[in-house]
Image (cartoon, rainbow, N blue to C red):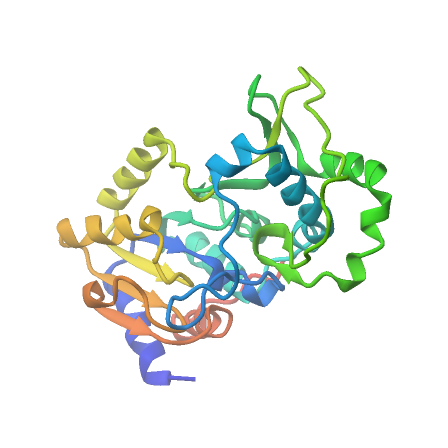
Length: 282
C-alpha cells in the first residue's frame, strides 16, 4: 500500500470537503463483476452491443438476451465490496456532495450511498421501446428461463462478462425473447448502450452538482468513454482539482492534481483509516 499516496489523498479530501465523485467499473471488480478495459485502457474483449444494432436486428436481440440469461444472475446477486462501502461512509461523513456512477449494477445504493446518479441507467430494470413501460429485470429473467431451458444447460461453461453478459458463442436463432407484457413491444435493458446518448437533463443536473462541489474524485474509471470524461474536462474548466484512484492510465491523466494507482477496494478503506473514519459494514 502506498502510504504516502493515501496520506496525500486524505489531505485532498480534507482540503476539498465537498466532493463530486465519478465511479467506474474498477469499483465493482472486487464484487466479481468483470470490467471492459485493461490497464492501458484497451478493450479486453469484443465491444458490447451497440444501441442501433439492438434496435434494428432481431438476431442481435436474441444473442443479447441469450447471453444475458446466463450472465445476469451473477450481476443481479452481486454484493457491494469495500470500495462501495467506503464511498458510502465518506458520504455519511459529509465529504461527498454527489456521486455519479458509470456503472449500472446498483451496488453504490446497496452499500448505503444516497446521493447517487446512474449516468448509464440501471441493469435492474427493463424498458419497453414501444410504450415506455419499465419493469424489473428479475421478472424478465424468469420468463427468459421458462422459454429457454435448453440454453441454461450451457451456464456452467459460460464465463462471466461485464454488465451481466456471458462469454459464449452458440446458435442463438432459437432464443425465445419475451415481449412487453403491457403492449407486446420490444424490451431493452434500461441502460444506455454504446452508440446511444445520456439524456440531456441528466447530464445538465450532474454538471450542476459538479459546479457546486469543491473538487472531483474519480474512482475506478479509465475515463475512455466521453460520457464520463467530459466531467473531468468541465472540472478543469471550472478550476476544480481532480484526484483519481485507478489501476492503469486514464484519459484525464494530464488533468489530475493527484493520482493513486491502486485498486479501489484496498485504497478507499485505507483512506477512511487515514481520515479516522470507520468502514460501513452493512
